[in-house]
Image 1 (cartoon, rainbow, N blue to C red):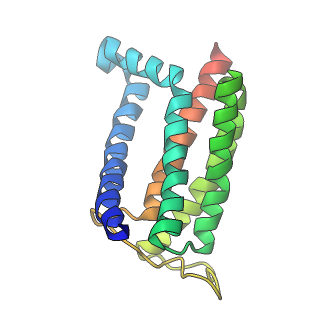
Image 2: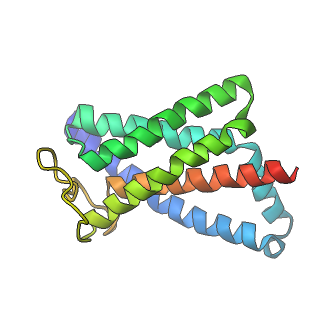
Image 3: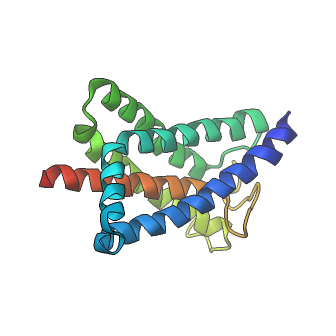
Length: 184
């Protein structure tokens, strides 16, 4: 069962990560140059704004479930940086769920954005370490080495890369929501 999950879930999540990178580039162009895309550009911007809660809920939900599956079911021991990344993604899921239930998504986007920034820092540093960067200090003297790579897809997609991608999208979408709500 564990081998099936590793052989099926990891490539799917890796493909979704790479696909997310492509979508992020397109969305950046749509936001920066909406006139190039005509009505479609404005439609995409509007679509992101009205579904910010679902986008963030999906990303945090997949992140939480994925982290728990990889550590508890598959047996990938999380390092100290993994734990720090989790510290910032788990409450984001709860905040978004509460915001959706109370219909207060715009009010809570600053908190979601605030939690995503340290997540970007930790997962960015973790990705840097796993892709061959030199550590600024020892990761952990007793636990799992933060540079340990459990898998690598497409030459760069690792677990921290997936987390970094999710955090960047969450930060961008929540920031766009904050800006749009201040303008409105």
